[in-house]
Length: 470
Ligand code: ADP
Ligand code: GLC
Image (cartoon, rainbow, N blue to C red; front, top):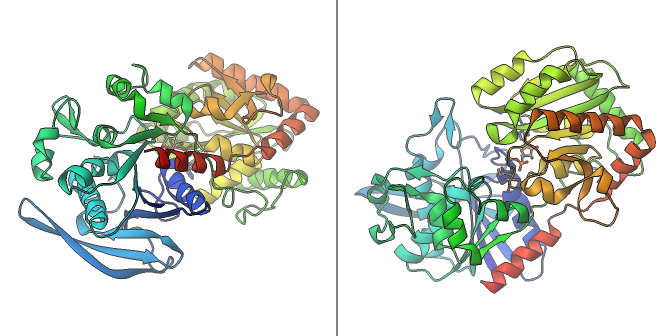
């Protein structure tokens, strides 16, 4: 079975969050299964280091004419990963960032990602695949373009990684991208008289997945449906929740070369060395104190405003807090201003430092307002760091409160809480401190966390089952 997997992010070439991780790890896991070949397609953004990744042209060209303008495309491949095809088109790729900058999203994102979708269709009109797997709004239009504009017969699976980001543009987009006005309806592209790329992905795909079973149920509610709950409900018979995994070759403390000391479940003392190294690099004091960390995009979804309110109390606690993230400028600024003797803040995107946090911390905080899946908690568990999570989306499906923990379940141990309130979050933190003070319990929970299997293997097989049933 041949799968074309389209994603606007694939790690290490492009990553702003979990989409980049999934974009590399899921196709890799699919390719480890019998008789499956997944080829991924992504834009060759300007920031991708062509020399470092030995990226070279494939001498494969095509054009797409829209409103009389000819848009040329050129395909590339990397000697580091022959299972990826990169698409180069100047409008799509030649930018400082992937989607926008501090002043907002790029104004021509509809055209840019419309062109990405046309590139997918052009490629499929030349190459034979059994399944087209699309991810998030950036590739959502392709579900319609491929089938209805190009008339290609192919089964299409669309994955929603985050319903909050829908790719909504004015209806002029219909004309600019030469889309089919017959599909500008309640059942198709149309969304409050605008064009919705994510809705198109849902409407025109044979199956739709989202990244955890709980989130699949949540998006059908007004609370998490971002005005699409009615539409999710009317498409319920083709929506599935499949929990993400993590790439356990990359996120593995036993081989992680960015750590000061590698460790596994039989050498947990070396995790302590990583804690010491972390204290040294951040200048925080007190080896005996627990370290609580946060890694993530600084946006409302991640509960950052609540974290800020909690920090007002946490600065008086006998524990250290380390926060790494980038995102909304006001959250970056406010977070920076919270730094003090026991709170260290790093604004920016830093893959190595994130690994130091997963390895050197005792707890990872995830007070998310909603969380489609979340990978950080799985990474933390793999590194023997206990997650403190709000019971929502994929956090609910991957972490179980230490009180209810039995070795048998598939979820990893942590501290979970229900209410989206500072009070509930602070109670969870104090529960974590009581675990920390019980050395035996803390050690056992860390060991159990590291033994849990969050690899992609099982979920990749669920996707294959779904591809076969389409
Ligand atoms: P989301 O996709 O919503 O951002 P996920 O939990 O699915 O959240 O995935 C986040 C991924 O991005 C993880 O690999 C995490 O380590 C990484 N990450 C997020 N923010 C940063 C940052 N500032 N620096 C380094 N890595 C980050
Ligand atoms: C999104 C979600 C996150 C999920 C990731 C990968 O960015 O916010 O919860 O883990 O996609 O699917």
